[in-house]
Length: 115
Image 1: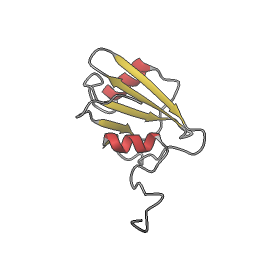
Image 2: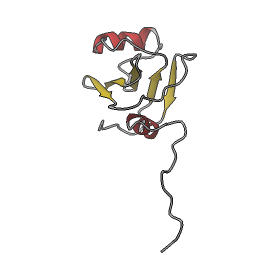
Image 3: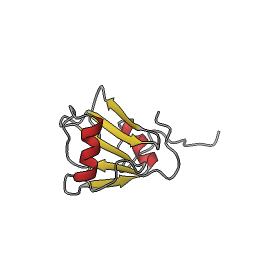
Image 4: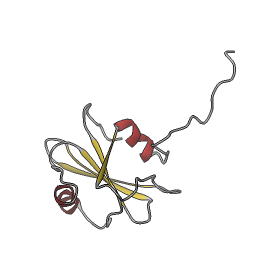
């Protein structure tokens, strides 16, 4: 689990990214393609072409971190490639990293009675 401080913005880079890219190359993509500051403390999420791997780039004020997650089954739900970056909440990011549709999370079970 990433210890996200309150107030941190989460940005999804739309489209797909070459997952061979490392920390410096992804930081350069944030700066040039997304027009954002890679050292501002925001989280930037990139997805590979197959859709089962994401990388998260985060500068915590002391240094840059790169996190990766691969799903055993399924694909990460991703926005269309029309926009450069989409902002989501930390809760939506948690849904996404669990493989849940972060755009419209559904309860899997709801109690029918009080007793």
